[in-house]
Image (cartoon, rainbow, N blue to C red; front, side):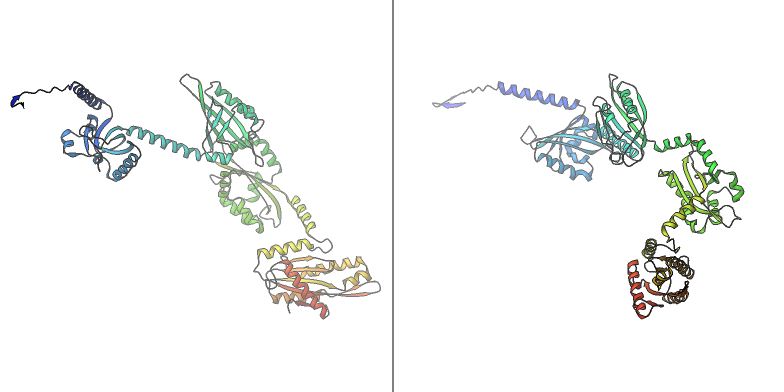
Length: 587
């Protein structure tokens, strides 16, 4: 009602709100539809404030059931982080804020507490900044329980790790053969490093003929193996050799197991390579066993079969028990007995090391299937003399019991060894004097000094006085006789372990090990006395003697050159005083 010209009149204003009502009705329908969807979806839906703990404003029935909530409790105030373990609250908040710093959506996975149990939840959220009904600055969440998927993925991870550990601790090589792609793939670094097999090999099987790593005689069977699975056979098997320059061939078995697709076409094959080199060697050994045994027994003076795993003798040559009077079948005990009763003392340590049972077992595990030692031993307990024997030990595994066996063949090699010693002796010795020659003398002294640098030793440099006069007046034949006689006199004055050599026409060296100056001086006096000689010819007599220069180790040097030079200087000083005497360096 309004006043118009002093009169009250009614005024009606009509506004068309049809469109607004239509929009409101559509929004209500959409809200009802959204609520219907949220209540009937499999996942959890909730609306929270974007505050410190994400206060819950609305949830669907699935969320309420999962976390045992009702509208009354929600109205009292419940927060999303109330259902998240305390120790990950801050971490989750940081991650939500980090994502919202550069986008308006959230995608996180975290654990929640549901009915006193932990579950894994995948949450996707939308940040609502503008006013929307009662919501302003909030987050709409869609959450899914992914506990089963997480558990399955963890089981897959654990199984993959078990597989990796199993493969890395076996001789087997596992790979995938992608049939359609004609490609072999593996992801094992150890295989690539140890066997030089690349992680991806293409051109299979056509290019196998070009693979130099496979023995040329075996490439055909390997190709056939791959062709079989390509043609649909469930599995294929072959054996072949891998080769590498400078190394012996390794035998491998190859097994391919085919995997088919939904149309029963071969899609790929799982390949298993296994190193069977030892088995092949054992098979070859077994095939020749009868021939080998016959050959061994023919030439052997002793023959043993020992079960190393059980520490027991299994078989032996007949003369063995009679001649050696073995006290028991215990291998360890018998070894000690043989070492003390039969083996030469100088060879006992080497013998004990080679035939040690634990060492032999370790060598078998390392793939070392053959041992050999040459040593001196008595033929029987009554004999005082020794013969040279060669013992060859073959190691193999029993197919029945899987015990480790040793087959020992002992042969008499005295004749060969004595011939070898004679040849070495001829190479090392001066034929005229019977002493070591110059090269051998120098090498032996240098080696001893290198191994015993702190040991007191004496170096004698001996020069024969007037020897040239013997050659000139009495002839070279007489000179040779004099050299031989002097050599023998020198050798009789020193120990067998000392080193005596002829290093020049009339020049000799003696190296006394582990001695003192006092003993060296006495030896020098004896040398001067024993080497004074009268050499008679038909019409003339030549008097010869010795001049000796002495240097001491380590006082005057710890190498051959230093001792020789100082000995030579000492000898020169003696000659200046009149020969036929001795002197120490520096005195």
